[in-house]
Every structure is written in C-alpha cells, then in structure tokens.
Amino acid sequence: MSGQNPADEPTPTEDIATRIVRERLGWRAPDLRRFTTGIAFFVYDVRQGAENVVLRIGRPSQGTALAESLALWQRLTPLGVPLPRIMVDGTAEDMPFVIMARLNGTDLGHVMAGLPPARLTAIAHAVADAQMATARLGPGIGFGYAARAEAAPHQSWSDVVAAHIDRSVRRITANGLFPANAAAGVLARFAAYRAALDALPPMPFLHDTTTKNVIVTETGDFSGIVDVDDLCFGDPRYAVALTKAALLAFGAGPLDYVEPWMQRMGLPDDAVFAFYVAVFLLDFMSEHGMAFNGNQAPSDAATRERLARLLAQTLGGTS
Image (cartoon, rainbow, N blue to C red):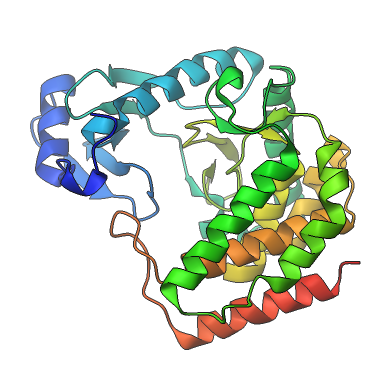
C-alpha cells in the first residue's frame, strides 16, 4: 500500500482513536483532544482520571515509518536522549498507531516568553545535550532525513539544502501568495556557500527541536523531546537555525535562546548559519496558507508581509 495516494486512504478519526484506547488500555471513558500541530500523523492527548497518554495514529501506508521511528527511539534512549516511554506498539495494525507516556508540560513555545533567562538557558543546554547524545550514534553514510543512517538519500549536505530550497520554490510558485522571485536572495547565497556545505560531514541530529517538540513545565523544568520520527544527517546547526527562524517568524520568545544552545555544542554563529535561517524563513513562506492534516491556519496579508520582511532582513545581515 506504500504507493497509495494518501487522499485515497482511510483517515484516522476521533472514533478510531477512542476505540484504540478502550481496546488497548481498557479505558472505558477516555477524554481525547487532538493536538493542532501534527503534520505527518494524527496525534491525540488522551486522559482518563489522573492518567494521561499520547496516541499517534497514521494512515495505513505510514505503518513502516512509525515502526522505524520506534526502532530509532530504541537506539537513542540508551544514549541519553530523553524520549517518552512507549506503552503500546500498534505499528503492525491496519491503522498503525503508538501509545506513549505523556511527558509533563507543554511545548516550549507556549511558555518560553514568561520564563526567566536562567530557565531558558537550562532548557537550551538540555536540548544541546540531547543533540550531542544523538551525535554519539556516529557519522552517517549519506546525508538528509532518515530513521537509519543507510537510508539517508543524498550524497552531500549541499544536496539536502538544495532540495529544501527547491521544495520551497515549488510551493511558492504553486500557491501564488508571494512573488515568483521570492527565493532569489536565498539562491544567490546558496551558490556562494555551496562549497562550504559540501565539506561538512553527515552528523546525525534531531532536526525539529524548536519551540515545539521540546516539552517543559510552566515553570521551565525540562521534561523531554517528542515527535522524533527520524534524524537528519548533516550540519546540526540546521536545527538551531530552524528554531531561530521560528522565533523570528512567530515571536514565541527571545531570540537569544539559541545562543547558549550553540555555545554548549561549540557551533559557530557565522554567515552560513544566517543563510540557514533564511532558508527556513523561505520555507515558512512556502508553507503559509497550506493545509497539513487540516492543521494549518489560513493565509493573511500581515503575516505574508512580515515573513517577506524578515527574510530580506536576514539576507541583508549575511555576506
């Protein structure tokens, strides 16, 4: 079924989620709330009394991806990467799913604006430590996004970045919400830095530890990391750049949150890093107004103007 169009597949529903929890956990009256940030999977916060779990459900063709993510977790957890405990593995079911323990807290972006600098530094250090633990898997074989090193699809890090930019260009062209030349500055920087990117090794890192997927309490205690479906093999600064771009674009918290993260890992804050931030701002522009599992907000002119301005400012600060 891997070649099936997702639009033709059965879609997870709240009724299916309720049935899974009743059958697998024996909960008679679970209270379900779907998270609004899921793009690849349908994710539910499930409660009954004082008990709380997270249920991730995929379409039938996503069973292999869910199973590979669990195998990855089994490799990462012993290295010290703080991931949720898996309670039920339903990846072999027709509608594949995983039930996991619910980490205490919420996405960092929901609370970081109200946290003191010392708390934010501690969280940044915890994320950096998780990234360094992931790096202990050792360099990969190829580059790009994959749950296993041997499955990384690209021959060089520049190929990964080129594919990322190309996807953004195609989306922007298809959506028609931004000018056709919106990517011109990013493409010019890419041409200038391609040789530097080609020299980088395929180091494994967690690519989506941004203002989401990093779970903290309201008082800023770090609980762990969620939604690790695969790794990226390449420059670990890419995850930091995504975080900075998210902070710029969505204003969840202070921009200097990323500085202790980079310092703890010994990562340089240079022109290439600024270029990465621009790549992700272009990506946000390309996603603007798109629907992912029904979770994306509609487009609006003010957001479009802000994203375009941030991209111009970021490119203006690189050389």
